[in-house]
Length: 111
Image (tube, rainbow, N blue to C red):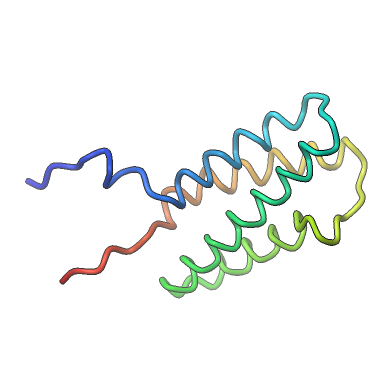
């Protein structure tokens, strides 16, 4: 029986997703505009990294979903929506990231 260490459980993609989830859920509070810019950047980077991982495992659905999230949250050309709309989107993307933790992970090469 292989013993799972903390290092094997926590990976870069999981850390990014957890940080994104926290920022997305915390976005329901009132913040300065800089917070939302940082959140957009983090969610975009996380989504692009997860797109790369999805590409490695050839999962077209996850590739599509993560690319859509990256486009929606990109900080360079922000999309303007109402606070209520963003709140629903933030919760939905948080849920997507939570679900993706089970299905999308780094693949360790065997040498």
